[in-house]
Structure formats: structure tokens, C-alpha cells
Image (cartoon, rainbow, N blue to C red; front, side):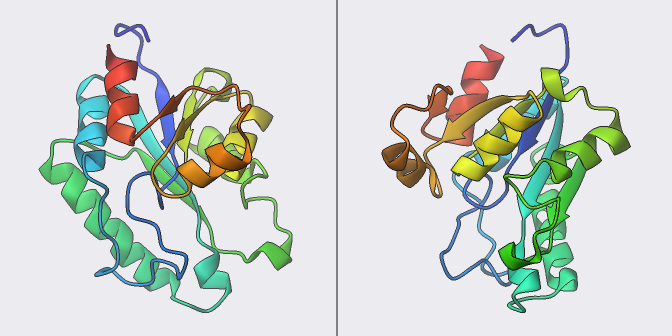
Length: 181
């Protein structure tokens, strides 16, 4: 990555920034950052890149938590990122359950296209970091460069799709070190 030209980086949330749970992350207390993820976001921001979050949050559609609780989780995330000297330029989330068949739930591209429209992102020059196949599929659909991290569901994604052609890193921090090198 050319350090002179800033790029837009779109991160999945659960499993990339914070610990994921098969029982869903349903409260502020359950929202716990993955080691190095907050620092990685701060490093990207300090290097001049814009960082965004695009996250499926079907727990809202399933009735496990409210949009207000999601907003409180995001306030905690943003506070930790600000304390580390970083910034998230924008957050898009899909509150729908899979049965809703919406256009925003990854692997559909709606979250990325809405961020692109709102923040003037050239998706063909953006990098998407995710831990699930649906994150990578959505990135490919919009012409972005997908990166797989092995945190969250990443190891399972890699095991179930051993021939994925995308760059793969242990953590967001490792991916960030590579992007900034």
C-alpha cells in the first residue's frame, strides 16, 4: 500500500474488532475488543487512512437486543478507539434477520454501497477485512480487495474454503502491520 495515498478500509465488527459469540454479543459488557484490534484501527487512522465498519447485526431482528444497545456497544468501541488515537469514519449495520431477505445483509453489497454513497468511497480501491465468507463475498461483489483474518469465524471460514485467493492474516493487527509496511 502506497503510504502517500490514503485508502478506505472497511472492517467487519464481530470477530474482527471484537470477540464474537455464537450466542451473539448482546450487551456493552459482552463487547470485548480482540487484542491489538483497537491499536490497529488507531494505526490505520494515524497513517491517514479512513476506517469504516460494516456489520450484520441480526440479533436485533431476532429480538436478542435493541438498536439502542447496539448504539451503546458502538459508543464503547468508538471511545476505546478515540483513547488510542484512532477514528472510525462511519458505521453501517444491517439489523435484519436472514429471513428478511434485505439488500443490506452481507453477502449482499448494501452495507458497502450505502457507506460508499454517504462517504464518497471508491469501492474498487477499498480494502475489506472480514472473518466470514459473507464478508469476503460482499467485498468481491463491489470490487473491493478482501482480506481474511483468522480471529472470530476466520479459522472456520479458511477450513471450509481452503482455496480462497485472498490475503489471510492471524489478526486485524497483523493485517494492519502488512498494509502499513
